[in-house]
Length: 225
Image (cartoon, rainbow, N blue to C red):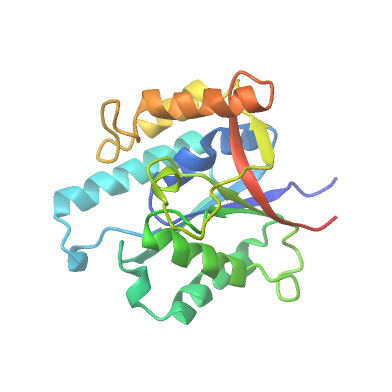
């Protein structure tokens, strides 16, 4: 019997994975794929978060992990919105350790030109941590879009998020939207971008682009066949 496919989704912040590829993760889990969640940043008291805020986030992560059926949640707990102040080698080393441990065939990461500086740093670090000559088991790397970050990335040199891979999530959209709402501190009422209505609208748009009722879109960064 063949070993199941292993997938690693890298999220700078809890909720990025749901915004960018929640439906795909649900589809994978249903088909028997082993999915791992790597959270780069976290809430600690030394970062100024209150005990209640920390406890709430821990509960959100636990509930979300249960909904996706993650094999394991890997938390690095670096300071949010401060990844650009730490040695990049430290972040690359931490991500590489997880990649070596999990040995994923496929890796999802954020888009480099998102508005949030943490996303740029994570993208660069993931690319370093998936080099083929060091991690030959990684056969596919994709970048996902994060509503409220990808659509607000206005770097003049960036040509924009241009997806070339689409995943039909018609059967998983409602559950994805329900999971999003578990992140009570991160979502708001429409027209706030991290809202149920906005995320559904994006899924419907991506679906129209690939002739499905709902879809998630990705940029293929590397594929080895």
